[in-house]
Amino acid sequence: MNTTTGASPEDLRNRLVDAILQQDVSGPRDARVETAMRTVPRHAFLPDAPLQEAYANKSVTIKENPDEDALPLSCASQPDVVHFMLVQLAVREGDHVFEIGAGTGYNAALLKHLTGKSGQVTTCDIAPDVTAYARRMLDATGYADVRVVTRDGALGAPEFGPYDRMIAAVGMWDLPAAWWDQLAVGGRLVVPLRWRGLSRSVAFRREKDRMWSDSVRMCGFLPVIGQDGERNGYIDDNRLVRLYWDEDQPIAPDLLRDALTHPKSVVWTDATVGSVESFDGVWLRLSATERATCRITAKPAALEAGLHRPASPALSPALVEADSIAYLTLERTADPLATEPRFRLGAVGYGPAGAELAERICAQIRAWSPARTVEPAITAYPADTPDSDLADGAVIDRPSVRLVIAY
Ligand SMILES: C[S@@+](CC[C@H](N)C(=O)[O-])C[C@H]1O[C@@H](n2cnc3c(N)ncnc32)[C@H](O)[C@@H]1O
Image (cartoon, rainbow, N blue to C red):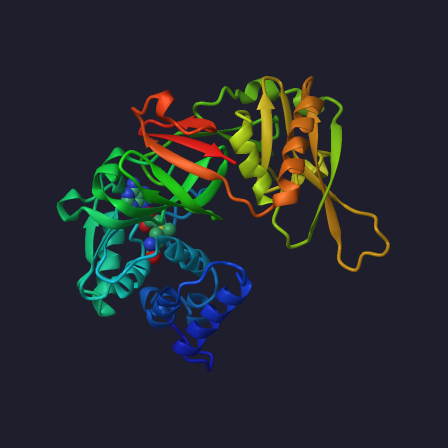
């Protein structure tokens, strides 16, 4: 139940939007998105959450997963991510919009606010209980004109298309062929895309035979139901260190069983970061240059047992080839004059080729360091596009799309 603690929902909503804009001070702005977020009552889409929780910058679960180790089945996405994805989408008055992942219906209401009366919003969810929830919330908040359909979003909704804008609110691993047919030429697609263990919200502009990215932002999302091209496996007997990779990569965790028992090789660069500075671009560069890029996660017990600390133990980029692995790491610099702590970036390798893989990660840290905010260009092509028509860059093939990532 919503309970108040003095501040009104409007006050809390405005404070949340102010905090999002302040936190992302250099990010792109869209005054219409800001107005929509100051207007649509998020708490009304989360009637079981306390008011403070509805206006915290956090995702709010509406459907738990029976598997306690897995992510929830449905939630309202984190508001700062909702904000930047809507800025990426650039909805205009009168647009026809399709959303994959209705969840609470909150984002669909924001989309309707942006299209105005002359536009149309269709949202879908794969789970009938979730679409029933979204329908109820949209009706109760004055957004009865948003269409809600129950289906696998990979099919789109051709009966209401074509669309000027499409947005996925769930982590996609492939770009379904139906979306190419339903997104108008000149339209925009914003999608949390997963590749090589990372997840980024990519904004594409559609042309006739390809889509070009013009914005790539860090995000994390629930994985879509129905696409399962990401693999994972433990590389230690205690099930504390896990890798995530794509099915097209020749990674076999069993080959790595002994790797972590070998002596480690640590390689350092001169690149440093502050404690809140992002080094996220290193992973993007690795994915554009190294086919062996994947993700490592290490539980605290693995570090206590002697594993060299990954830069971020919950998720860091790694390179794996056969029986060897290397991953990104960092250490605090020993500068007695520094007022703020700084951290030097490097890589640690295990296994016969560990030192060489660690050197290759350091090469990408060095390439990233002088131009840290440069985003990769990601181009998506239909799956039947011949090699000769692809842009230069690293090619990642999925059943329905060919992605090319380049710097
Ligand atoms: C993060 S939630 C969406 C949040 C929502 N946009 C909101 O504003 O509350 C992701 C949703 O995607 C749905 N989903 C997962 N796989 C799907 C699929 N293949 N097609 C459609 N919806 C899917 C889940 O049921 C879940 O409700």
